[in-house]
Length: 326
Image (cartoon, rainbow, N blue to C red):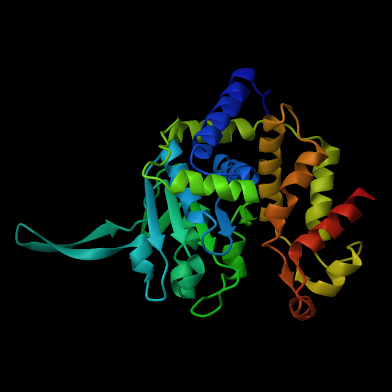
């Protein structure tokens, strides 16, 4: 790994700060959510935003699309949505008296895709995003079409609604870099929201970065070194989520399967970004701790007992973190 250059670090921090400030001209509060979403984007990852309706999940993604000059598209997921409505389809075209099939790209051919209420679509339609999210490409009628970079999916879902919804399968959840839980605003933030949105004029968000900036920021992140002992701590965290020897008692009792190596890859990339934002040129344990919850919470498969007891994955992850430090 080559030595990380100061101009690259300066570009990363300045661009990140500009995007964060541009988003904050419209969005009120949620600074941790904004930072985590931007970290995931810089790392080339996808984000699942979970929260009850009306908390600004869709508005956040729309604002990010305005702050970063990239092609943005939105899909409103519904039970009658078909895979071809997402990735595209072959259409019979008449050209000079000759009929031939032509591929018509779907909305997934963009840089930033908002998959709104993703759990309302059927599993078959949800699966249409699997190849897109992992390989950044689409295969239709035995022809593979590569997506333009950068590409990232921002998906939203309501955690308390069950009627007419289809839970995301574990394989698709694992494709998400982070799962972020959007909470209620504070009293003062609530008043600011009303002030900004209750009048005739609303704050205008201008583009302060481009797709090339995001790609360069990702390259900078991958240059941040990590010491062997810190990497060992990361591995212990991920392995500690599995009910194996050395795992906490709560993991053995409430978890059927733990996080995958993809979780470790996400934690490493996000921790490197955290280190740069904190002004350090190396990954520390606190960087790993700061990204553990959003990177792991959607990757734990609870046992029947865990489901019945209503166990929250966050509490289990905290048990693993405490055990890894001892």
